[in-house]
Length: 74
Image (tube, rainbow, N blue to C red; front, top):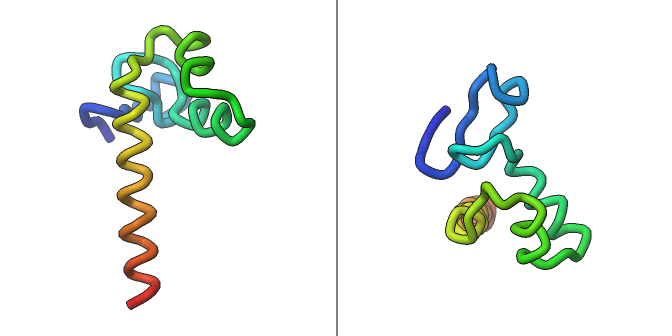
């Protein structure tokens, strides 16, 4: 799977979803936020990920969760 935000390639971290154009797993962002770390700390530790990429991934995750919640409520 490849799109503008996330890439998945068997040759990059065994197919783990990563931020497009990087080797940074998307899961790393979620782990940082789950631990209570601010977005800026994540971005400082992973300078190949842009702020706009991180925000776009979070927006996409939010949209998917809202769709799922709406489907469950229907």
